[in-house]
Image (cartoon, rainbow, N blue to C red; front, top):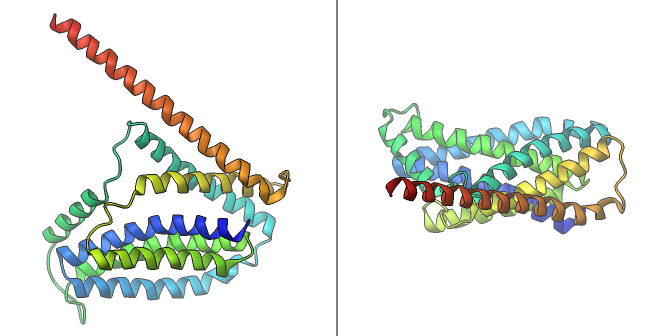
Length: 257
């Protein structure tokens, strides 16, 4: 895998997770208590660093073939889930993810929750909400970095892509102090789902003992093929939805007559 492809893939995947974590922290801070929300986010990062530091090196002890088979299967599952939702949204069969609406729901839930603090934390609910969001999304970022980095034998480069994504999203969030509603998350999830699915197919096949023509260069064919299939299904769903709407309209007109 080329360094540029590795960094770009990790950056996009981690940017999606960072947007979701930032939305939760902003909701906790805006709806409840900023200091407690930031304390929760900081505590989550500390616990996450300890967890990754303790468990991350163990992954390097797994044989590369077995690692690629397991990781490829996991990426294929995650990628297909993301790609399925993105295709359904693009095809009009599933509501598009609205980061602004999600933010408002979290703010409303935070404001309705009970108050109270513990020790140095002024608002325990805000602390817990921010901690949970940052820790869980951070685990996904760590998973992306460790798995992609180990498979490409370049963890530092994968970490660079993740760090760039987190810094970019955090800086944008600090600048606007609002949910990143203008970030085309649905498009990002379509792209990331395509990439994860492609890498999942590639690595799981290699882990099972298959040899791809051209080695890593096969990804230059595999990624566009997966994207084309996803876009093809999107077009079919849009046509089916349009035909169903036209049939329903004609049926209503016939009934009214």
